[in-house]
Length: 564
Figure 1 (spheres, rainbow, N blue to C red):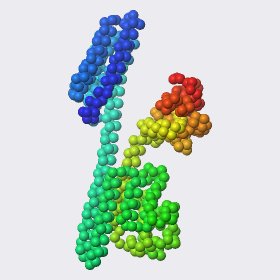
Figure 2: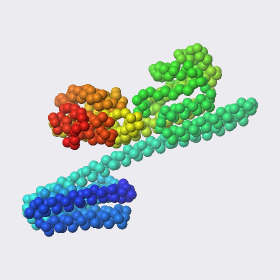
Figure 3: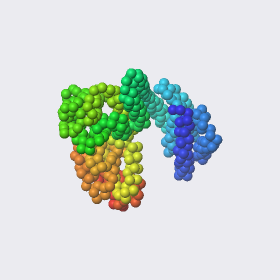
Figure 4: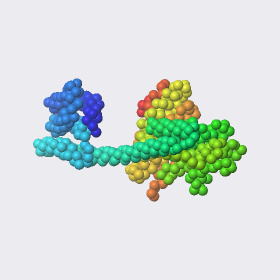
């Protein structure tokens, strides 16, 4: 973490510090009023210490002292120690021990964020620097008063120390693994760049070769035409390379490539077929350009079959001329005399087929370098799209279930609200919570709990997608489903059917059979909610109402429910 990030984190935490200080002071004042055995001197000292923290941080923020990481570290360390002293020597009321421990944790966490701990060895140093003085203060206080509650406080501080140590250690280890993954992805990207440079080098060699051949041509007109064609090819390739470097949208890249081929080569048709699930695309992709109107649909219908036949016959490339073109079913009774078909592969995996054809004879017997270069560029585009898709998948999907995570759901939900307001339509939202999920974890283990969560997530996504809806894992064992354009009356039987499907599931894990039960809250806009912003809130209220009143049920919002 760089210095700027540390400074920004500390500044953002000031609001939390203010809130904690205010609550701590209110708690202390209430104790002073409500409990007669609380001494005014202790309360005064607590108020002074907390007030000092507040004033110092406010002045530091106003004077921009937080811009110095070293100052932040010293301040947080001093705050940790003073909080420990306040716990040991000033805080004599067990009713507010938890608040002081929380204050110590706050300063310890802020100090940890400011230390820029980069490896696991430094976690030991950090934990010792913070934990040892605090524990020492408590031990000193225990030696003064042998009251048993100081033994419990000592054990509390040991727990905090262990949590800080081990969680910090795991955090640093996690960051290290993420860094390794990012480095690996960067290395792959560098390899892609190197391939692009090789293609550009090949283009330069091709230009020199064409220039040498053109000098030897007797027919100047033909030589000029070839030069112009070579230039057009290189311009087209440069445009395609530029487009590939600027975009990860494979459909647009396919359009750019086919447009360039048709423009430069003046062919009768050009088509690209990409199979489903190549770059996280759920459906096959077709881009077909033709000057013969009747061919478009025939080519689209025939490309998957052509690809399968060539793969089964172990034919990766096929050139047909004159009567041979009749072997292609959709070219019968069509004036096409030259056809070239290429099975597209990446890392020995078949991902589609490329096809071109024209009425000119013997068009593809030689000088295929342009098409080979185009196909090579297309391989790069596929590679980039796959990497981009995988990164998008990582950013948008929940790691355990594979469905949308909460961050991406918020984006989809925001776009959905904008659309329904624009179209003046409706939106229903259901919030799901797995009943007694903690009991499942405690009884069968967390891996069994994970299987329950994954099963519910799969059922939700498969079922809701049938109604053009979208779902996400909202947190822990909670899920949310959105049904755009569906009223509450229509949504209720849909959710009831889904409820029955989920609750009839049995998870077989090891020797156990684990039943599933859920509680659901359902609401809708504009029938119930006055604004779309109320949807998630009211669905949450309804869901918790269902849980509070017996679980294993659907609570449909009628507008009367309030926060549970």
